[in-house]
Amino acid sequence: MSTDADAGEATDATDADPTITLYRLEGCPFCEFVVDRLDELDLAYDSVWVEGLHSRRNEVQRVSGQRQVPVIVDSATGVTMSQSSRILEYLNATYAGESGAVDANPTTEAN
Image (cartoon, rainbow, N blue to C red; front, side, top):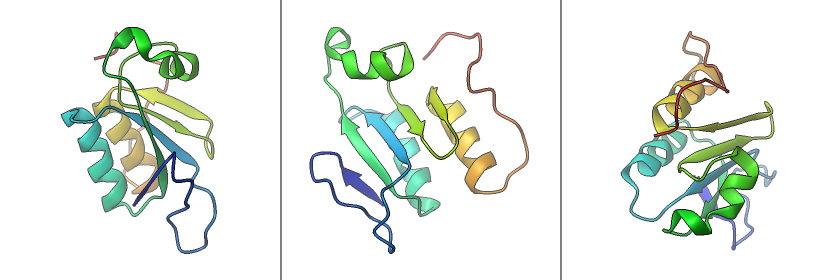
């Protein structure tokens, strides 16, 4: 379940604000992998749609230090993370109860 950041609507049954913000690009398959998993886990989140040009992704750079998408910011846990595969591991470990720790700040390059 998602909300569009422009709509400002909460999506969960209690009308609480979502703690997860997903920075995404329309048509990005890696972003859709993350969206699908968030929906499978029934997690409320806000979507922030970003510009197609890397040079115009200033908000993504401000929150994550880079301009790649997808990026999630989970205010409940204090995690900001990029790379779809790492985000999926994080969501599984944090919200699906799967074992395994995920390094929120690896030394590898963003994909």
